Amino acid sequence: MPFAQNRSGHRGPWMKASTKFLIGSGIIVATLVLLAYVGFTQSKTYYHTISELSTLHGHALHQRMRVSGDVQRGSIQHLAGSTDFVLAEQGRDLTVSYVGRDPLPDTFKDGSQALVEGHLTSDGRFVAEQVQTKCASHYEASPPGMMPSPSGQTNNNSVAPALGKKS
Image (tube, rainbow, N blue to C red; front, side, top):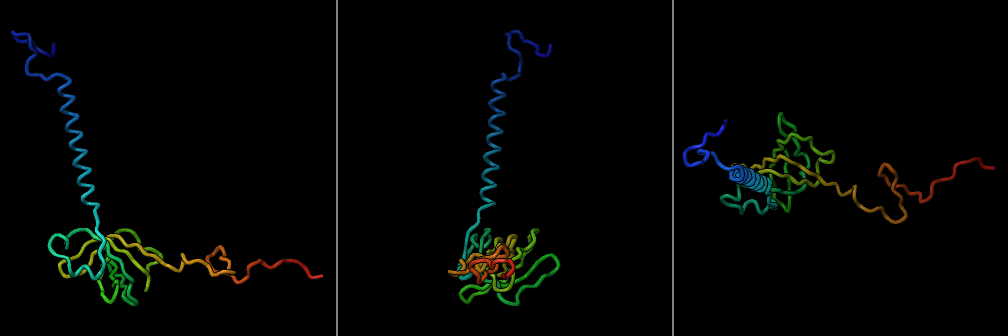
């Protein structure tokens, strides 16, 4: 007999099953709401231009952000644990240290457009956990009369030459 009844017929300090269910459901819902809020606040990123970074103050300096620019020629240095480079935009430069785990994109090279995601440090460097690049030459339309080949190169011949013997 797991529940002992007292003189008034009540089963002691035990809660009803519906009360337990409501409390358990409330804890689960509160946990899910908390996890959603934490995930939302940690994934929030703001986009800024390099020239805007000098105008940021207070909390805005320490928030997660995205910045884009052109990779300055000759600035890429592969170091142990990071890759340092300089982004340039409208005459302004930003020194970036990429410390992410993913390999850099194949199109990451001097002169490519890059979008970095991370945060600023107190000395003005940008620590990036993600780097994305865009190479415009791969997405340009071919000039009229030029056919792209499967390798991505353009071909001056609009019709493939016929193969066969001359008679």
